[in-house]
Image 1 (tube, helix red, strand yellow):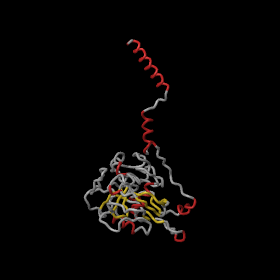
Image 2 (cartoon, one colour):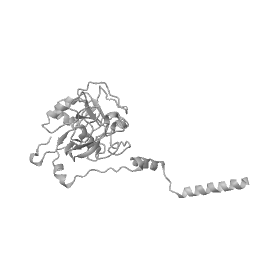
Image 3 (cartoon, one colour):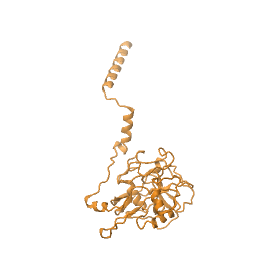
Image 4 (cartoon, one colour):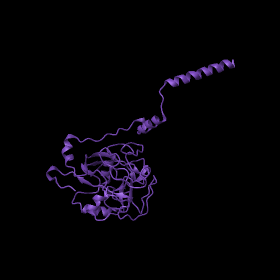
Length: 302
């Protein structure tokens, strides 16, 4: 009887192996690819789609100053109720159309306006860094109206690219889109080497932090807001986007941190372990401009 059971078990095992051999063979690599492609909860793959310009906006887009892209305004959910406390509450923010620099301001562009280069890593195509808020104001004052700092709302809206995910490319870190601590080699890189977001903006995550015009407040105002500019006064300014030495968590679209406009402060440690280095702050910026009505269009370009 025991021998008969043994024969049955062996037969079943052989049959199982034969059936398995006839089925599709899945490699560990393909399993990993499927995992990274399924970036949205519930196994739904994130769809990355560039934002096209509607026919009625083509004229506005064609008037974008050199080096800038047209950002079609709209309403979006700003903030994150499930991350750091200062990223909440989530609220609806509505913005007018605007133009934004395609790249972070480079050192060559900076030196044309401001005759010094404080950057730790030097190179004409590298983003300028080691600059405080008032350095940026000097650049703006010498730019003949062609540069303003983005508000926090403008920055987040542009960085999001209408994506509803952790990053503009999905919920998993992808080093094709950003320089951060795992792939940067401990230094900044020339602007525009990684893939752009849906609006065609480069380095909205990583490389260097970026100044915004908003004063920092520990919580957002509640309710729907139109073209919000933050609290009217404060002690610190908001910076966004993370840098080459940031963790993947610090590059989240909604992550925000603060620093004194003269860069005199104790380093802040966030939930995700990001430290703002007091000696080497690695903060840069990019410019925005409003979209003027056709009758007041200026032909001058920086």
